[in-house]
Image (cartoon, rainbow, N blue to C red):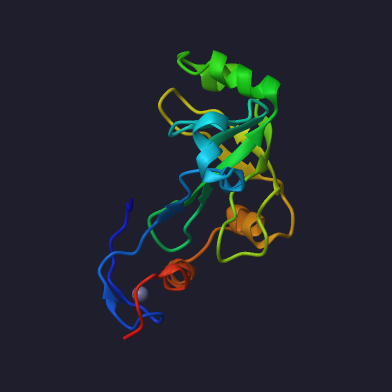
Length: 174
Ligand SMILES: [Zn+2]
């Protein structure tokens, strides 16, 4: 999952990585993990884009896109946000509708993914912007002083993206 290739020496593991990831994401909303594994099949409905837990918690997957100031962007955090039941139903209703991006107003959602490399991100306020059929929604953070929100407004540098890659590097140190 990368649209930018540039090698770098990792300050975390000391190895050379030939690809700098430009997106990271979680396959499920964090709340998923609070359901015991043996109950997940009965209590959770999920696909790549949507998730319902216990028939009363509704989530959609979208992209927090961050402009890159000195490279080809955007940098993307692939995240889940919760929606109200009404807005979730509206989203489903328009799922396959051509021009849905013009029909649906931005929808309020609580960020439901813990994003590493930042102070707590769970329950940050967002707006979900519907995009054309087949494209995940754009997630806009409430304009606050939270570093993630600041980065979405102001953009980040390739150096910051390298620091993120090093922090998230899961290779063993040499
Ligand atoms: Zn590394």
